[in-house]
Image (cartoon, rainbow, N blue to C red; front, top):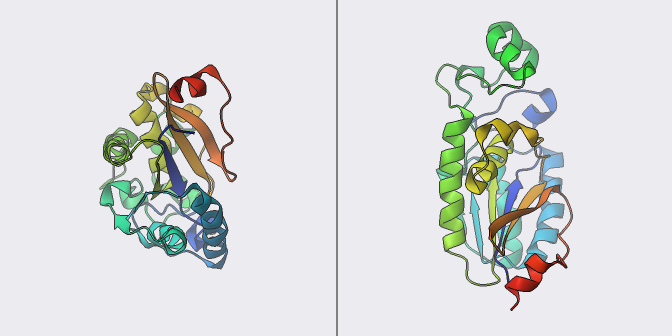
Amino acid sequence: MTSRQLVLWRHGRTAWNVEGRAQGQTDVPLDDVGRGQAREAAARLASLAPSLVWSSDLSRASDTATELTQLNGVDLRLDGRLREIHVGARQGMTFVEARARFPSAWEAVQAGDEPPRAPGGEVEAEVGIRMAEVIRDAVSCLGPGEVGVLVSHGVSIRVGLCCFLGLPQEHWRLFSGVSNCAWVVLAELRGGWRLVDYNAGSLPQPVLSDDQLATAE
């Protein structure tokens, strides 16, 4: 396979994930399960021999990324653009608490609309822009056939890949959330970058199609 690939990898589990608390940019560490998830996933991703590994500077992401860099010897680069969406005043709240405090925001989410900005927070469009920017920077550093890994967060990965691929924002919510320590794979095929795997826990298989054959010519 000669196409460039980029893996967007979500961090392992935290105690706040279990409690259903909005983490946002609060620096919540991995729990024991999350550390185990990171070790297991890193062993799989290391077989791709990534040439770059960049991570959000929040510890739940950087500690996940470190499991991979310890296996393949690539230097870890921290980049604040890979942080999770800042949910402002909602940070630390459970879904029940947020519903009581911000009922209009809850109603918007239930209706399938983009959540409105919480006081002091970001909206998804802003996150998509910064994530698409760092994705473009990463792929510009990849040579032919090379693989890069960006370690980030659930909302950031979902909206970032959509923005990078140029999908209209009204379609972003068609994508489900990304599970803890699962990943998304983008590959450069004929016609540009394509989504080839989503919310995965296994390595992608070669795509035996005209798209893939064209890249090998």
